[in-house]
Image (tube, rainbow, N blue to C red; front, side):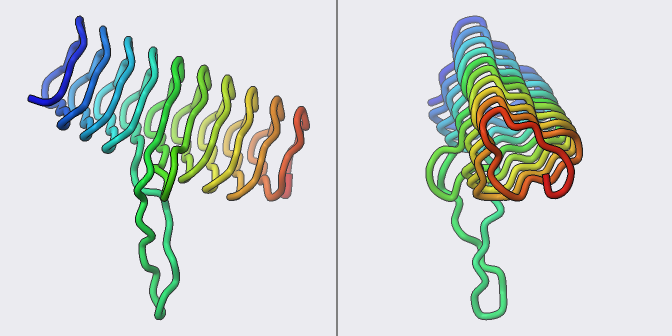
Length: 199
């Protein structure tokens, strides 16, 4: 009862919406979606079947998430203590800005602290993994099976071709292009074009 649905919003069978969540006008939440507590969707968002938005996730306007996409699952954060891997609490969130489209079975992890972000107009293909604390700029293209390590910054208008891997705590400069199956192990300057391993 504390969820708010905007005018013209459609929620299909077996979808569920958590407490204190707000959906904008003319959104379409297809069958089997799970939207957590305290989530915000802008206007004209489309969630295809079985999308999961964890608690606190925020989407701008005109966001399209394809089937099986998960936004806001815990980041892969552990500390080695007394001979075992101990989970580091992941208490941040994820922000997806307006006009972003994310393909099927892609994942964007929540931050340990802070707000990972996918910038306006960015397009993300199927089966892409975005680690915790990652910042992705506006109008970038991430092709199929790209993987980005935690706390990396991808600036505006970047292209990461299929199966690229980007290590953690790096910066990929604006308008850079990384060719298919490349492994990025150091910072990439603005407008650079790189390939191979190491790229």
